[in-house]
Image (cartoon, rainbow, N blue to C red; front, side, top):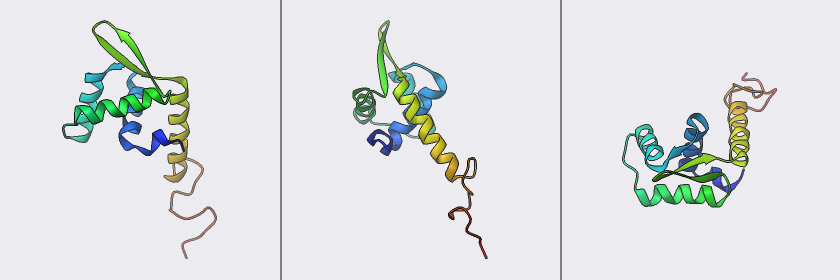
Length: 107
């Protein structure tokens, strides 16, 4: 797993953009605050966005007076890979979903 996925906030920002497409920073921040049920410090929020842009996972595009963020192809591929990994471990994929290695019974 790459470093960018170690941060829950970065993952959540990526999931929002994966679902909704490009968004300007304030709209993205509002959606994340709504999900968390609390205010997010702007400095840490934009720091997470900057880290994603610097890592090549998000792209920043000029759009009128507000810049918009969107997932890059690399960001989308990493997010889809992470989703597959989660599904395997939650019973929605190839794993057993019982918290035990495949083939291990609960006797």
